[in-house]
Image (cartoon, rainbow, N blue to C red; front, side, top):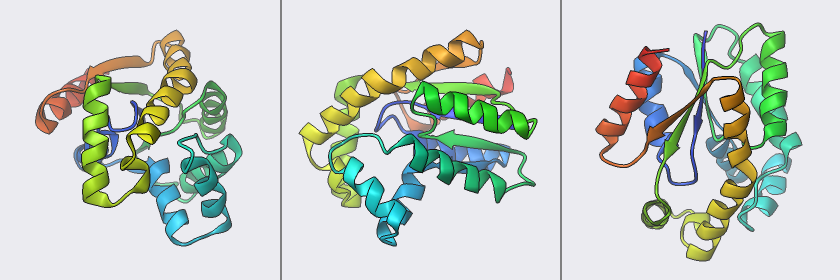
Length: 190
């Protein structure tokens, strides 16, 4: 089973690249962002709880995210593997994910981290905010806070996977196709 963590700051292109990787490798996409947005749109209890965090540019609590991911894994028992997009965001989540996958005898294969310069992230997110109407992508101060939170709270996840020899940094600058080619090369060389 191929289980990939697609990692990178907000605006790195994880969603775009995940869609291309899904098609090529026939994996199941688990995007916490997409799941949270659908919960927000449906105004579920989970969505309303998540909204409080997202409006401040903060990460949604581990308990909310972990429960949501486990439910999705359990509902896709015949999958060839998963692309975890936006999860895990903390070392505690990474450990919980490893523990959950260990029980299923299906560990993380690799973390692919898209590396993008801060100025490019801000530019991409503001553009996405105009196109999608997402409030959290239309305010530069919220965007900068999200990047700051990412750097302080999620970068240790890189160290966690690096210690397991599962981390691979991927240059996330350039065309969508160039970035996709770098990701595929890394996966094919596993």
